[in-house]
Length: 105
Image (cartoon, rainbow, N blue to C red; front, side, top):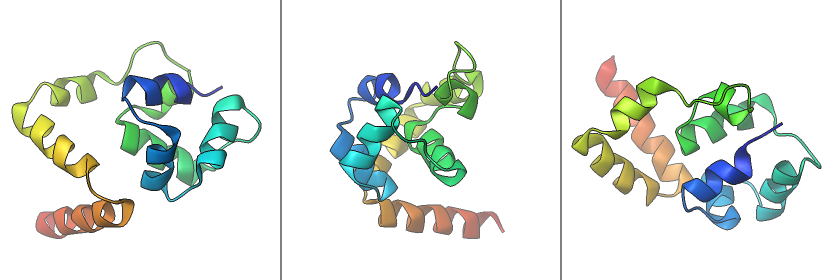
């Protein structure tokens, strides 16, 4: 059902790193990857956001990732922002998102 392991490995993330970003345990990530359990809708949305893929791609419903996201990845500014964002803790990432949303109001 999920392309999670393949996508995670493509992003050079260990289960432990992904678990930290999602506020979950590595065992939880492992159980999702092996199909023993399934993530909640909220966790699927977080996974898609953290891994920068569409939900359809994450759920193996399409062979192609969201083309819009691929175009954004080509931007040097997006690459720099993404690199810095990935170094933050999950809580700090949420604070950054909150700040960005406040700027857009």
